[in-house]
Image (cartoon, rainbow, N blue to C red; front, top):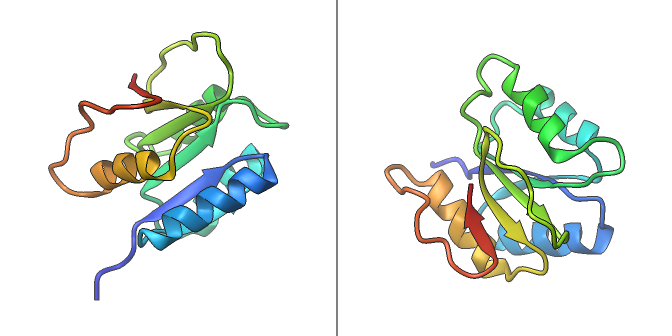
Length: 135
């Protein structure tokens, strides 16, 4: 039996978190939903495996870039793919660890395509359309 890919979702908006988690669970992923960055950080130490982090840029306790730096400082997490999400209109800096930026609001199928590419072997994240841009 094949294990479902595990996605940690860090989103402080409860309604959006619930909607996104439900949509990607229907696509076959196991979702660990967190309402803040430190909850997501805790998930990495309690979950046996995490395949992708979907991370809101601005969380109440930590900014996305700081959380990525903390995770990548841990041995074994340096290659963790991160999908950043944001509702901000301004340009965000590019930094190591984020594979793409997904602008809110985004369609569930857009995130699903990105997750599929990140969790399937030999599937490069290229030509991402819609509200996403490759970092």
